[in-house]
Image 1 (cartoon, rainbow, N blue to C red):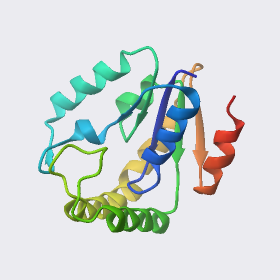
Image 2 (image 1 turned 90 degrees about the vertical axis):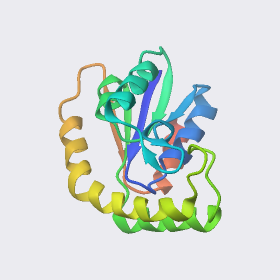
Image 3 (image 1 turned 180 degrees about the vertical axis):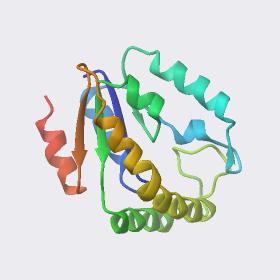
Amino acid sequence: MQRIHVTGNAGSGKTTLGKALSKKLNLDLYGLDQIVWKSGWIKTPLEERKEKIQELIENEKWIIEGVSGQVFKSAELIIILDIPLWACILGILKRFAQNGLKTRNDLPRNCPEYIGVFKAIKVAFIYQKVTRPLLINLANELTQNQKVIFIKKRSECEGFLASLS
């Protein structure tokens, strides 16, 4: 598998798993937060996002972490971090505690965590009600060349990584 999409709710561990996969498989990792957001937590216009995502998926090999139907449909392996909402909220709060006033490395400049924490919590609830059912529907419409893996607990990530050769 050379085109891997790691997706799931805010705070589910997409970036953490993406980094581990990138290291293990020696594939470039791209985070969609760099595309979705501009400096100062300004949302990138939809057409611009689509163009930038298209540029990424045209590459032969990649790991892309984030939520995108465009990436989902182009991936050979889709890993859905189907982590419970409460665990995602804890993940968001942990990230906030670690970063506070700083901007994470996986975000554009001037996107401090203390602002993003509120956006992420709101997104987590919306994801659970709206996005998750859409992803499950997409997972039921896979092509022959695609495989989906649902990870229900963060502890399952270690076993999944160990299973890769």
